[in-house]
Image 1 (cartoon, rainbow, N blue to C red):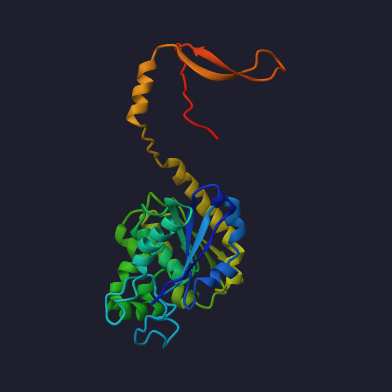
Image 2 (tube, rainbow, N blue to C red; image 1 turned 30 degrees about the horizontal axis):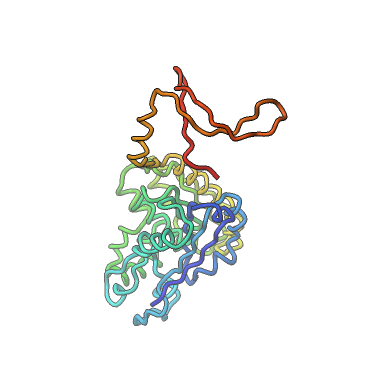
Length: 320
């Protein structure tokens, strides 16, 4: 099979590596749906973040039964690594999203290494929540639109987990509600989790179950902000209405993660040895000097005294 993904590069990518938001799509979608209809690009441009849109399953894997229904197989990978035949050879979306795709993105595009967050819609919201919960140190933030919050307790999850994992009950290891309950504590990495849910969503009562996640979160002290919107449905009209909020939510967390990251600046030992030769001594160097106000600069050789108490002397290695 093949895997295709789409990427939005903000103007800031021309200047240097950018943080990345991964957006996981829902059942039947490809990498095109959110890229074309999600309305994320303006907010991403303003925030200086990339957005990566993976596909929802392998394509052309020729697995028996993969094209027989909309909620299993093609377009319905459920972001798990299948362990049961005939799916296990190709349907490994969890590894693809958490390892293969980030490695490819960071090697091939101006993506800041390790600086990423994750969001998604419906099945993709389930994927975003569970992937973040299972890898909390790998993502700066997590949010979701109308996610399947308790898939091991609803028909979509029963069908997918029974097929991919051989047992519907095994799906609890890929269920946001169950993962949070089993953890028994809040995620320090995620001070808040943003979820938007339309109240006219046709799948709300039977498939999505945000109240289950809220109950588990309350029990362990995890903040989850579920914003319920009258008249909101399950479509990209709904998603695009709140996409800007999610991009800003992620951009803020990514900026904080970038600021907190330690930077290893290794200085060449030979350079340090040269500095040691002049420590505490006057040094001779070139300088651009204006000898009076409104006079042109001239290049001069000057002597710089050693720094006094409370002073430092800085050597500029290069500039541009």
